[in-house]
Length: 143
Image (cartoon, rainbow, N blue to C red; front, side, top):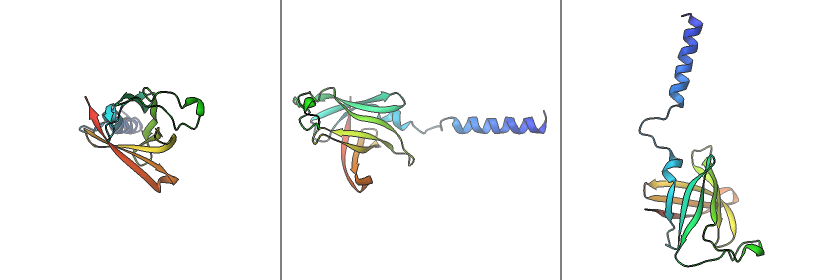
């Protein structure tokens, strides 16, 4: 084998090793997939893959609720059950899962991050003004 070919094979092997998942390191996106209950126990959100990202929709409500704060008056009579409230979550430059979260309590969409604090606990943080003002809610995993 020539020196040039040997160098190419070594570089190729290095790239393949770097691309392989590290043992013991989990895939954060896969770890978040599942059913989660919000902190006040009023709703459950199913988080699943939507293409290369994660999305979430309301799959259970303690009591029937409608999208009364939606800025589009025609949508204010729709049920929140089945409504997609998390859209396009992917790792950002800092490694956090970031996307858009719709808050039915005020009808607004916020830049939102998702962070597992344990296998059973997910912090959902919505921010405005480039992250200057944030509010978070801790959701619990459901069976």
